[in-house]
Amino acid sequence: MRVNAYAALAPGADLTLYEYDAGEPGPLEVDVEVTHCGVCHTDLMVIDNDWGAGVPVVAGHEVAGIVRAVGTLVDTGRLAVGQRVVVGGVAGSCMSCQYCVTGRQQLCASRDSTAFRGDRGGFASSVRASDWRFAYPLPEAIELLHAGPLLCGGVTVYAPFIRHSIKPTDHVGIVGIGGLGHLAIQFARAWGCEVTAISSSPDKRNDALELGADHFITTRGTHELAMASGTLDFIISTVSADIPWDDYLAALKPQGTLITVGVPESAMQLSALSLVFSEKRIAGGLVASPGETMQMLDFAARTGVRPQVDVFPMPNINEAIGRVRSGDVRYRAVVAAQ
Ligand code: NAP
Ligand code: ZN
Image (cartoon, rainbow, N blue to C red; front, side, top):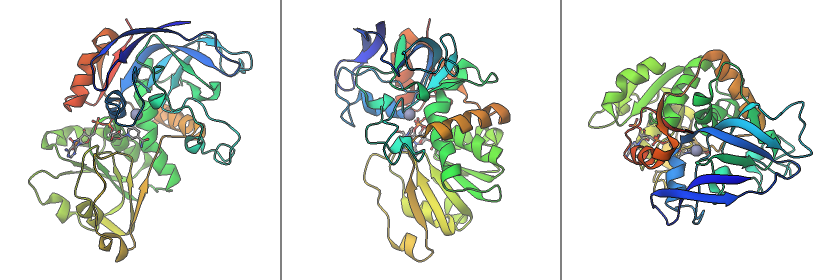
């Protein structure tokens, strides 16, 4: 199979056309024609070679599209050519290690991380999942246009609700209203929680409330975060920048948990006292297992959680990336095949 992709040929470079031959799919593999692909903040780090993906690199790991070819061992009763699917940040795993057999495939040491696999990402005419069980049939109610950002952005912020047993009676703070954050507000609302959106951008107040937040805190030049001290059971941070972690930990109730899915630029600076006296916790969160992903798709289909998208034709990929870099997207950039 010939694939027309958009690759960075040097770290941080504009993407240029890049063709490769993927050959025929192996026994468990699935080829998906890309109709849409979301642009995640992680794609910028991949293009910039921050995490060592190397060059040439084809980023893109929020793929929505149509199955065009399946390997000989694919169960075509469950995944057939012509089906609408979505492929996210994990596109395969060994399915036999202790993490895979206990439904935590995102932790498999040999997982196929779509985001970091070099020149085989989703900013392309086609993408290959190395295991068909990571190409998820799309519920009828979800359009292809909206599907990509639900994987990875959506499922990354959905998974903490399951893993940390967040209850409808909990008060959840969502920090950073971007691609992940605007979906996290919607999921928290649909889960039944009281929701506080915490943002460095005062102009996002109305959007946050419309997305389902009960309260809005702006951190820039105000004391609003300090005034919320001791009010939150959980904080999910989606921020990609350095923030004063002690101030956020102070907003948690005793034994509250701060989950960071965002990846700040520097090491996290915080005082142990922020954790010790009130027995607070910090956890990380990584995208998601097939079980969590399927559950999230069903939940989103039923509750109406959808990304708000800025759509760009695929050939305008560099414009989309530029907008994500400057934080000028409301709230997820999606590139669409022509
Ligand atoms: P995004 O759309 O750029 O949103 C990030 C948000 O962070 C911004 O909208 C902004 O929200 C806030 N922010 C940015 N710069 C800031 C600053 N200097 N100070 C305070 N707040 C700032 O990015 P995204 O695609 O949602 O990704 C968010 C993070 O999650 C990234 O670090 C990404 O790499 C990571 N990620 C992790 C996983 C995982 O598996 N753990 C999966 C996907 C993405 P406000 O304007 O509201 O402050
Ligand atoms: Zn991502």
